[in-house]
Length: 312
Image (cartoon, rainbow, N blue to C red):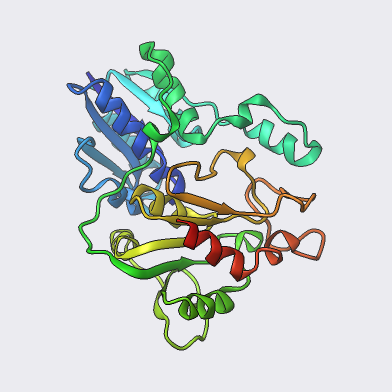
């Protein structure tokens, strides 16, 4: 049996597919499991023994290049599991010979919850469980425990126990941690070495290690793996830390568990303030706080983050 898993972006979503593919291979060890993704994210799957081949599409090459890739490379699959659910991935339903299966992302239920606070039972599922659902239905296998679907990444970097990777950045303002400098100072006071990494600006604090800026995904994973623990906002690096099995503190401001990306795995602590009634304010976060106070993050003072770290 030959199977293709499809997820084009973004980093965190792609990382979260890895545990699902691993579980599939555990259930069907003789199957070939390939992946189709955007070229910049292909390194997520490097070194993973349960991934046979990675098909890469470069967005810069345009749609004609993608059509050619589909025509040349997807003819001999038995099953295609679409874990993205966008036009680009759904195109495979009509232009590949394989049986096509798409996961249910529940976008409408998430948007409805933000607007009305009406809770759909589907929102209780983690996204990795939603990724696995089409596999369970297709092959009539039970849904695994959440920990069995934990994402996984490869790195051979050596870990330094007191180094703590700090990633306060995010794609949206309301998911960004505002006390990065104060947190760095408190970590140093408690005997830790803060290592700032990611696409953002490190605080001007003496004694930190600054590895911020653009870097290759594989180098970034190695930086995470070289640290003894991780503190991260709700972003791709948070899921990378979970996949690398690092003791991890997740900082959740405007987003909540109901969106399915909560790091509900062993060795993880989430710092959030559920008394802030206006959260969540948006499915993906916003560029400004709609209420003007930003309490969902401002109430998460550095002492709470360090306390969570020590509890790990």
